[in-house]
Length: 88
Image (cartoon, rainbow, N blue to C red; front, side, top):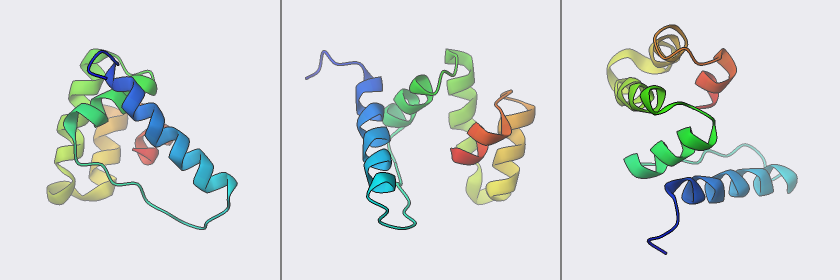
């Protein structure tokens, strides 16, 4: 299993989210506290390596600047779309 790319772990999280949506379980949140998994998720979303590093730094600031501050940084400094920034 060590041979699988990190994006494989991120894809599992993506599938779980899609299954929950399809089953209409109601609102849910998937919380991840693992830099490697987040890096893989960002890779699946198509972020460049530089964007992935910048996104990790931005998301780490959430307790200091709040959700809107992180979204603003992701859009204005990491150059993500507003949709992707809000989804992260």
